[in-house]
Each structure stands twice: as structure tokens, then as C-alpha cells.
Length: 220
Image 1 (cartoon, helix red, strand yellow):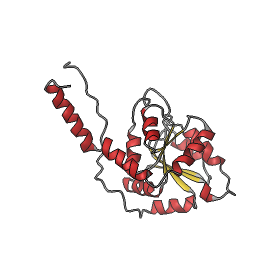
Image 2 (cartoon, rainbow, N blue to C red):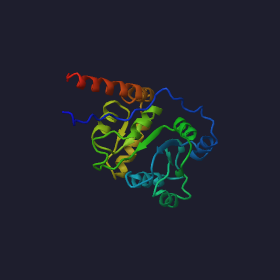
Image 3 (tube, rainbow, N blue to C red):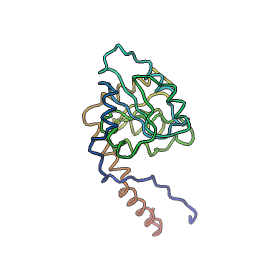
Image 4 (spheres, one colour):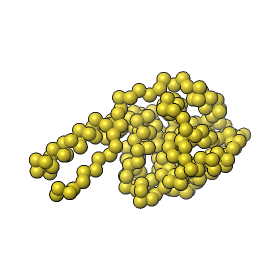
């Protein structure tokens, strides 16, 4: 009908260049991580994310254990709960909430990270959708750990792009994190290829244009 709405996902341009990896922040982050696997989060520090489970896992790690078997978590972004979490983890050798950073720093942090967090809570706002954060992590080629059911879980698991955990489950989160961090060497390539095939701006806009033309001509 004339009132029918065509919905298309937001596209990202895959031709953008990721930073060369020489930011002072990234260098200092590697020193703070002290040999631990770096796990990043880019986004709003708010109640829409299961941050509680991530932080509980992070601080449960022991300082006298082998760093090579541990994880260091870095949260980048503003949000209403930023000060709360900064206070909660103050002094922890396993996690930091750094606040807002530039795009160049994001590029560098992605380069030194092994896993990315997308712990979206299962609410009507997110269930059944693919949030932009998923696309962004794929652009960087990062394995994803998520607790979001539906399409995101299906994409991540069926394409071996990361791991799923049950929201709020500390033990399950730890298992998912280890699975994502131990994915095969081609995981980054698969993520980037999935991004280019499904979320690249030129691909999405071309499909949208084809859909509009088809509807205008009465086809489909």
C-alpha cells in the first residue's frame, strides 16, 4: 500500500581507515593490562547493558594468578552510570571506565583488544534487532560476547563471530568470554566479511534502492 514503510538498517562505510595504533592511551592501556587479554566496550554506560555481570566477573579475578589466563576490561563512553561504575571499580587492576575518547583512540583500543562486549539487556527495545554496536565491532573484526537473544545471538553463534551468555549469569559469562577469546585465527576475517556483506553502507543503500524501485514498478 501507499502507507507501507520500508525499514533498512543503518549502514557503515567499510572503506574507512582504522588508526595506525600509536595513541598514548592505547600504549598506556597495554601497560595497565599487564599481559592480560583486553576486552573492550564502546558505548553508553547505562542501564540498557548488563554491566553488573561483567564487573562482578572482572573483580572476581585474583592478582596472584597467571595474567595470560586473565582479562582486562576497558569501558569507553559516557553515560548516566559512568560515575557509579568508576567509583565501584576504583583501584581494581582488572577493569576501568575511561569515559569519552576520540575516534582515533577507539580505533587503537580496538586494535589492541581481543574481544568486544555487547551485553544488551533483553528488552523490547533491543530484542529482535541488530544494534549498531554489533555492526561497529564487526567493522573492527572483533569477536563479540553478548547476552542479547534473537537475531544477534543467531548471527554471532551461526557465523562463529563470538559467544552468547545468559544475562546475569556470572559463570556462563566467564565461559562465553573464554570461548570468544579462543576463537580460531579466521574469526576477525569472518567478522569483517559479514560486515561488508550485510552492513556496509553501499550494500545497504543499494538494496534499499532496489526495493524501492521494485515496489514502484509493482514487482515483489
